[in-house]
Length: 89
Image (tube, rainbow, N blue to C red; front, side):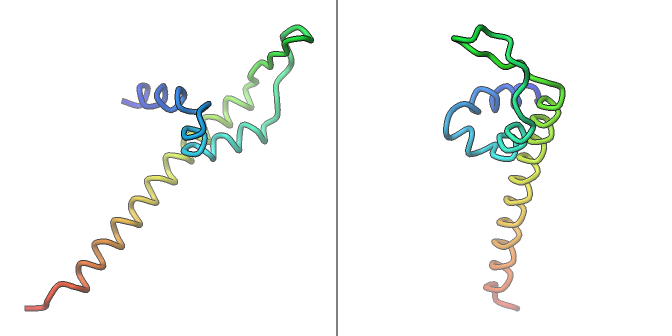
């Protein structure tokens, strides 16, 4: 289950919607810096470093934790609101 989800998020990441959803991963990878250039000068390509891969993994975990926490808070608020509106018998 985790692997298909990671592949789906990886496919969405370059798109604006995907980047907005996994913003902690994008920030951590950008802060990790670029890797060494392995392409020709007219078409530079940067290789990923272990630090960037670790930042991507940590960022993906933080993205997941952020949205799980956000949904839990929303559901808790909804449940609390229903309790307050429910008539006491």
